[in-house]
Image (tube, rainbow, N blue to C red; front, side, top):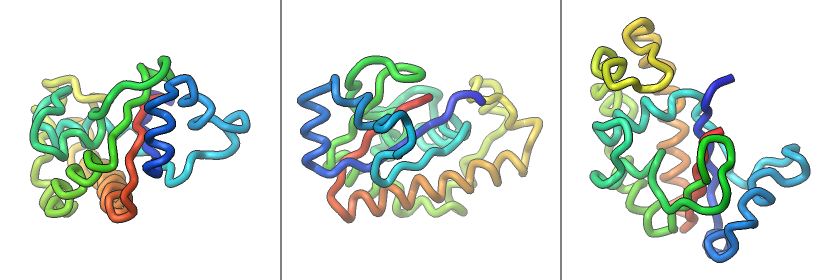
Length: 165
């Protein structure tokens, strides 16, 4: 299966509740034994690290630009789930990420695809040079969903919770 990047929008009330009660993260994300996803849930499959690298310009940096927080940003909350704890982005951080992503249409974002550099930087799952244009198509399909997720969440005034499983 591999490592999958997952996202869910949080109403301002849910954001504050989870921030104040980190023990509630597991129940929020995996209610009813995993049969019900949190609101506005989606995943980017294994493209999470490639999308992050293309947004941040590094394998793990999240400092700048604001869109670099889209995949690996936020404040860690709760116990480890999957690969580390979940991370919370406040409604204002979601708005900043959305503002950074807005001009990065899939066409513009796709120009950042550098398969050789990505494989050299060990960007998971290290298939980029091998897959070439197909790798870019794989990334862009999920990037469009991620971009839409942030634009919609910002419009609603939501925060977000991010995790790797």
